[in-house]
Length: 440
Ligand code: GBH
Image (tube, rainbow, N blue to C red; front, side, top):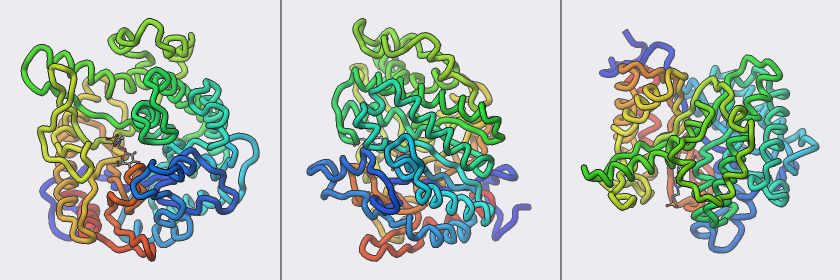
């Protein structure tokens, strides 16, 4: 019999983890405080026309000053896991070299506060906020960035030791490649598909070197990458649509999963790169052995599927959320999780992001329906044998939604951007009950 009020229809396994997710630049604010150096997102968001209404993360949800209140909210909800990111330029203001003691101290207080409340910290090392000083040297375009990143990672491993039981190297390298370097809608705002693929390779190399750095200190902590994945479907039953869905699957999924979990790029993806593509020379002998070093877990982020036409375009087959790119399709999560098991084996999985933006301040019934349906899909995947350990929704708090600024609210906790006051949405109360019952 489950603990807590009522009996759920879908009971999750004993010990299943219930979490919420955030990232540093999106919630912290205090952009120039206590010695923090600027990141590419500080620079980008301050350039005219880059973000909606010119919004920046200067103050954001002011989590840097309010994290004790936020910790208490997490405890009240009953969270057993919290996934956040460390701002590289807060702990290393120029990305390399001298540690900023005050910045490091902030994360120690946060982690200690989590542990004191029995909430497991899941720390992401890179959620898109490359230190501007590193960007000046070329950022991820520069092969050495992988090493600078691994040095930063090693410094964090040494400082936190086993206090942080789960580390994630990169958040969504695909988004850096597509939004940061192809569409140019994210920092650093470049539009160069060939360069983007080089950046993608260097990000993967950084992941592999960071995994190696953790092994070198013999930590008990576990490590993996956080990948946003989209199951792809042919939009109709033509052979051409099926072919294009496979091409899209290579771009969306296998291009990231195969190097990290199998130590190789997919052959069809490699073959699709032009003969003179710079990524071909960026991939050096031995890189894939580094990138493919054994991971302890895979962190999955699921927002939407892709329905691919015979011409390789995309069509909507489901309702979209306020985010025009997001089609809502809970079954896609079942397909994704079972596919990972089928093609990549039984690596432990955690979900680190899943959610939608809603317009109502407090009465977010649409979010409740979204979360319920996705949790039902995750539950079915568990029944089908998928080793899913923990679910983190995106997001704990309303926050800076990158190029969309504060116009999209993704939190289960409402943030008033005049007073920075927090208020529980209906979904927060709902999630608290889910956690108490260990089911929906
Ligand atoms: C995640 O990205 C991020 O990890 C998180 O920080 C973010 O807040 C959350 O999801 C919600 O978006 O504007 O048409 O060019 C999700 C993947 C990739 C979706 C970039 C939006 C831009 C589409 N995102 N994409 S567009």
